[in-house]
Amino acid sequence: MAETPTRPRRRITKGMYILPSLFTTANVAFGYYAILEVMHASAIDFWHLDNAAKAIGFAVLFDGLDGRIARMTGTSSDFGRELDSLADVITFGVAPAMLAWTWGFHLMPPVFLSQGQWHIKLTQLGAIASFLFLIAGASRLARFNISGNPQPSNPGRPGKKYFVGMPIPAGAGVIAAVVHFTVGEPLASAYTALAWSAMVTTVGYLMVSTWRFYSFKDIDFRSRHPFRLIVVLAALFGLVFFFSRRVLFAIALLYMVSGVFWRLQWIFRRRPGPPPPSYKEAPHTS
Image (cartoon, rainbow, N blue to C red; front, side, top):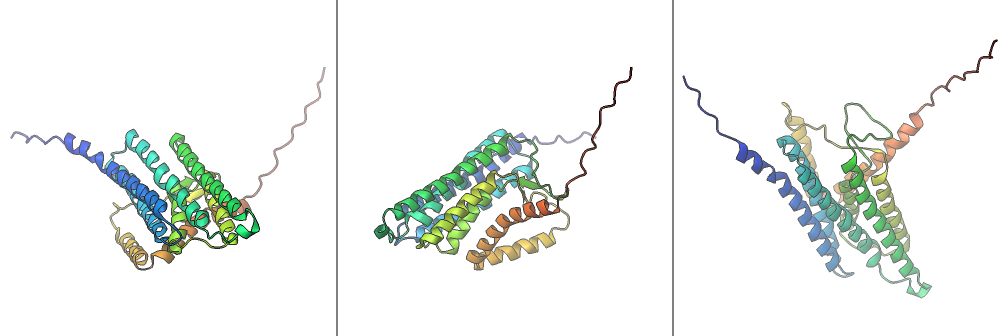
C-alpha cells in the first residue's frame, strides 16, 4: 500500500514568522499614538495624557504577547528581536519619558513665578529625570541583547525565571499607571513634582540595576490543567476592566517594590562565609 504524501508546510512556517512582528507593529503604533496624545495635551485638555497612559498600557500587553507567541510557535528570529528592541525604545522609552515630563512638570500651573525662577528650575529638573529614565531604558535593552544568560546579583528560586533589572515595559507601565490613576490631571504642587522626579529616577535606576524581577516566563499556557490559570486571568481581566485605575496602579507599584523587597531580603539573609585559612610560609631547612 503506497503511502500518501504529506503536504509541505514551508509556506505555513514562513507565514508564522509574520505573526510576532504584527504584535510588535501594534506595539509601535500604540507608542506613536501615545506620543501624539502627549503633544496634544494642555492644562485644560489634560485627558490626552490619560489616553497616552492607556496606549502605553495596551502596548505592554502586546509586547508580552509577541515574545510569548514567538516562543510558542518557534518563530523567534534575529530580525524579530531587533525590531522588538527598536519598538521598545520608542514605546517604552520615548513615550513614557515625554508623558512623565509633561504630566509632572510641563503642565504644572506657573504659581511659582513670584518666587523667582523656581518653576523653570523645576521643569528643568523634570526634564533631566525623564532623560535619565529614557537612557536607562535604552541601556537596559542593550544589556539584554548582548547578555546570553544573565544572572541577577540576588538569585532567587532555581525553578523560577527572573529578569536582571526591571524590564523597560514594566518601567513604562509604572509611569503610565500613575498618570492613569489621576486620569491625566497634571500635578499642581512643587512637593509632589519633586517626589515625582525622584520616582522617575528610581524607576530608571531599577532598570539598569542587577536586581531580580520575576519574569512570568515559567507560566505554561499549554499545560494539561490550565483551568486555575484561566480563572485567575479572567478575574484579573474583570478587575482591570471595572477598576482599571486602582488595579493597574497597585499592580505596577507592587511589581516595582517586589524587586526592592527581594534585594533587601537577600541582603539581610546573606551570611558572610568563614574567613579563608591563613597559610604561613614554612621555614627553609638546609
